[in-house]
Image 1 (tube, rainbow, N blue to C red):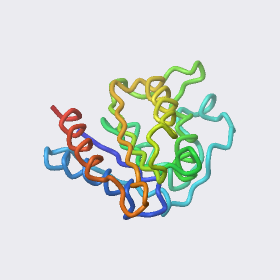
Image 2 (spheres, one colour):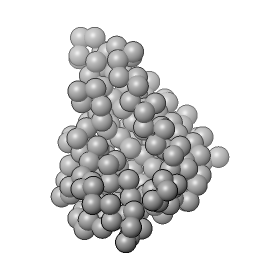
Image 3 (cartoon, rainbow, N blue to C red):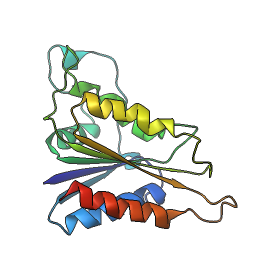
Image 4 (cartoon, rainbow, N blue to C red):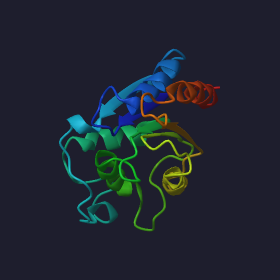
Length: 184
């Protein structure tokens, strides 16, 4: 079984990465092959709307650091997308990656991916109000369904009201529960 973990935070030691690392470690201990990418360390552009992936090619034709990431996602069984919430959405790094997954759709908008993949979206936010930005996962979950993912899970983490610490222990507990569901 293969897992691809994509970290969309500019902080490689931030909450997004720590929660993702927890799941990766849990699954690696169960024999899952894990590959992690830090988008902020990569050179790439977002989708250029060239539409080549809907005509002459079945993959994104842009050749940059995202090319192997997209190929690994296509070959994976589990995908983790870990990104802080910035200004009410995923980070710019993650959005650029997500836009490039448009190449996973055929011209008729059916998915090129093998159905049944599993997704985990990790969304820590500085705002302690759990109602704020709760729509992010719902929006992206629709794309997971469109791509044929069989399961999708979310882990949200929040800073304490005094901003002194995140409530990361709750996120770790949820990461452990989701890890057990991903590999039964």
